[in-house]
Length: 114
Length: 112
Image 1 (tube, rainbow over the protein chains, first blue to last red):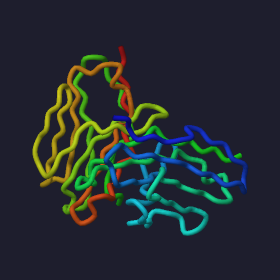
Image 2: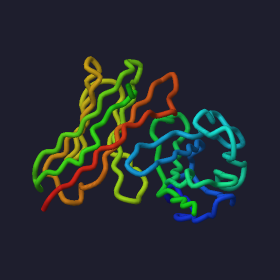
Image 3: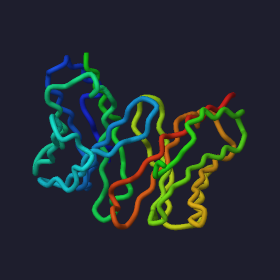
Image 4: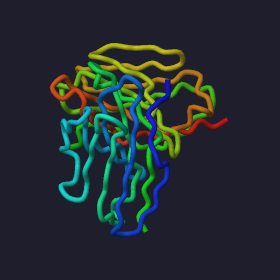
């Protein structure tokens, strides 16, 4: 049973470009969470999604950031017109139905904005 | 005051020592308590999960929750250099049981 898969592992973008981060949850998991982590800091919740639904996006910046989890395919975190301050590690986690506290993480995508 | 406080360390101990890692939290509504281990440039890995108070043991690891003092601990016995990592505590509640609140993490170094 493969774990949570994130790609790419590293992503370099210039200011103003778009970044698309992908996450495939563990098999059988229907809940996906995106977190952001700055160096030497803890994880900051961004958004919680189920298939075709955004359940809670209270941690998402109001502009430039969006997330989706389509019926088919991975969850996507999209950052438009990236700025240097978007440079961070972005982690995706998934959990099985009924146990949303037990979250399993992917290896993360490290975004660097030049 | 942060909802979850965790000393960032680093905490450096010799191989074989017993390690004690701790977090305090402010909201008595929290009922779920997790410890994750994160190696450098990797994703967090779930180590221990506890619901409500009490102790839970898994091999060399023991998680302890004291709800009266809002204090959670992770003990590592017979520490190994491979235990060197950042340890993150996380708490959650029934009311918002998916949105975990995270400590900043404690960097642990086990010296051979």
